[in-house]
Length: 479
Image 1: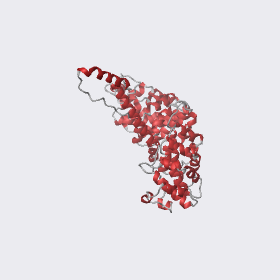
Image 2 (image 1 turned 60 degrees about the vertical axis):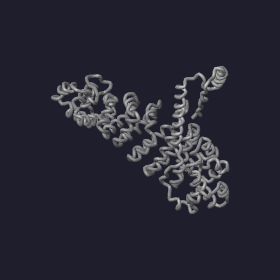
Image 3 (image 1 turned 90 degrees about the vertical axis):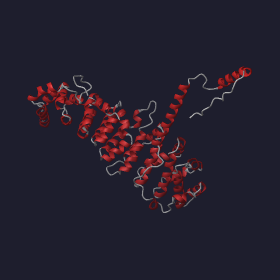
Image 4 (image 1 turned 120 degrees about the horizontal axis):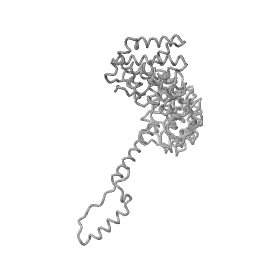
């Protein structure tokens, strides 16, 4: 924040000194850098600058982490026979660390790396620059390849991770000392805590900005990260993995080559994770995936649109809380856009998203879905030739009618359904070659559109406001 200056104390003028005082004041104002500028605008500018600085600091804290939970980390005393307690590490000087790290004994090297790691983990004034200036980064990086010394390997990795969590200059030192290929190689470690440590380090490097994000991508970090995903991967490991992947999707360049980010394999990875348990899905949501899905669903490449919509459909299969997060993050408009205009593969995933949404969502959430235009969009897709898609759509329509029944809005929904052309489409499906399609269509007609009720629907449904009103149908309904 700019240092504030105060105006000089006003003095009592005498007639004799008026001219001189005026000259002094004019001279001072002439040197003032904001002379002639609107004070209100200057204040607004200062506020804006401060807000941006706070936002940048917040973003940096989110994208880089010095403290993180390694789900696979064993007990430290079991991990290292030369374990250094927190109270003992304060007695270690930088000189002691340099001596141990540069020594020939593996025990001393491990002890030195561990002491460095603990000092670098301090909340206040960690000695990042001192460790770098001591020339220890090259030694730390060399230890990363010592698969026969896993404790030394792990401590060196943790120390480098903490350094990479600092400023861009600190991260630059880690990268320039060759840590990127070494960390990518460590992802394949059979020891889960070492592999997870590498995930964390790469996340810090990716979080520094587009420059190092692209360096990591050029080094094929994405396939290496995706290879760590399996049904047996612990949830905590997945949480850290998705955080690193989310950093690789941040920091857009002014004109980024979209193929460079390799969205399709990343999205396939995310889609696989959210197809798991609700806990695993929430891990991905907490990592920020919902903030980037809308733009990916509008990506110019159909393959990216399809993968993003597939991931959305898996999230929509979760509980009402996760469905609400989809709504809050603005996923309904791009979903409806894909139902209307996407290529058929993407439309198919979007149809599944709607059906999942109507199966697990609350009545209020189903209302919002209909209001977004999704009902009209899926009605228009009832003419496709894919039998499975038609059955999924009919299932979604049935779920919407069930929600209307709970609101005592069945008659009004019937009228809206007719207005949107749904009744004609469903009646036509009673002549479909597939028996399951015929049965599903016949069930809808029999339950909600029997001959004796059609006239009642038309008369009664126009009397009152209708919560399911579609924004594209401006009849007598109002939400």
